[in-house]
Image (tube, rainbow, N blue to C red; front, side):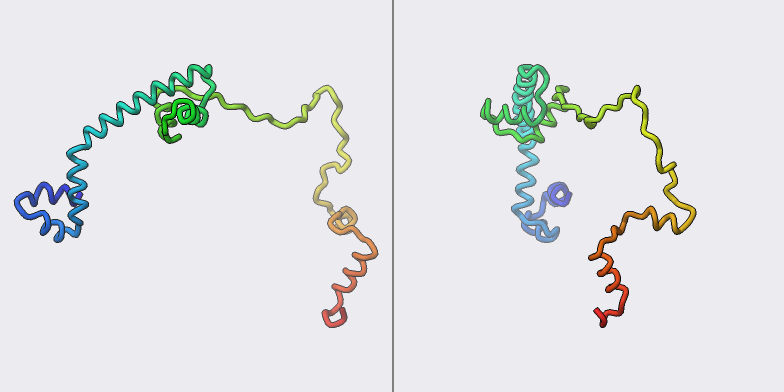
Length: 163
């Protein structure tokens, strides 16, 4: 935007003074001016290259019976045709032209429930919050008592200097 201002409003002034005033390097200004002049030629060359790669993408996709996606098409372009292309470019061209690869569906577990089989009895009767504290202590499985655990729990309940 600064380079555009210098180019439009400072055409009759020296470039060095304008760039110094606007705090832009002369090389950046001249690079911007060069790109503005040659941008249409570069865009046309990129469009021709995209058209060529796009035709190859369609050809590869059709030869694979419509199964190849972006990674395999990119690999085929690189290894089979010797074209150095980026996977993002292949993705953009495939999205624009319409071909899509086939994706495998995820398998959902290995257990198949047979609805004809009877279901198991509910032995807990869905009482996960007992009414009495004693019942909760009896049901708790967080601490399995053994002689070693008993000794450690007895020691930990004492004062630290008695251990």
